[in-house]
Image 1: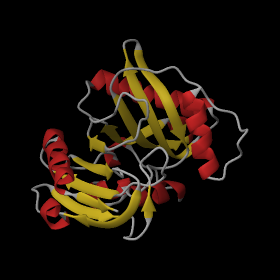
Image 2 (image 1 turned 90 degrees about the vertical axis):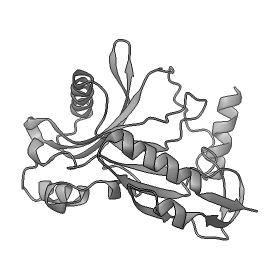
Image 3 (image 1 turned 120 degrees about the vertical axis):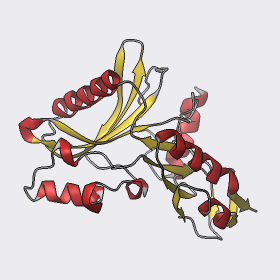
Image 4 (image 1 turned 135 degrees about the horizontal axis):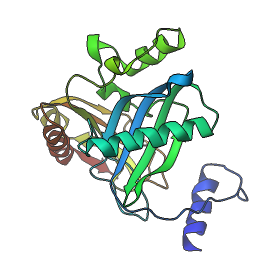
Length: 240
């Protein structure tokens, strides 16, 4: 009941209908990952990036923070996740175009959390650069124009990742300090703050925005995760 009341409050703040149905799901423990790929009719799902989520919380809310690719999960687990996402897309009637899937690895295999006919959200795709310097959006457009994207095109040449910076508390954002120090961390390729000073902010899930994004690239996924975590600790949001 407490959860439903809070959800209704969030919906009301977003000017959503107060009486719309709520979906209640069973909690699934285990590592979480996300898959971005392309569907091409009968060829199935071609994965372009498989992200680990090393900082996924156990609840009661599940805001995302760190995403690191390639996944460090065993190959058979990743293959199972890609297969599950492909089956889910077909069950929804999807045949072509981009897919973004979220899954958890349980004791009995991979389970779908959500799947959408779109690419990864926010500015997260800026972390990805494919062979030839192509962006994720360029691959999606090429596929839409009839230029097939194959497994050879998939996967950034080097491990990379993104840190979606959560809003720490409610109030008015005055500034974000430490950006120069964060950008100087080895492996960091960019820091973007997406909320301008002077705007009132709320932490997730009551709010609907991240503070910004940190991007990294390094020799190993572990190094990417370390760089993102270090840079994140150097940033401080001044909220009044």
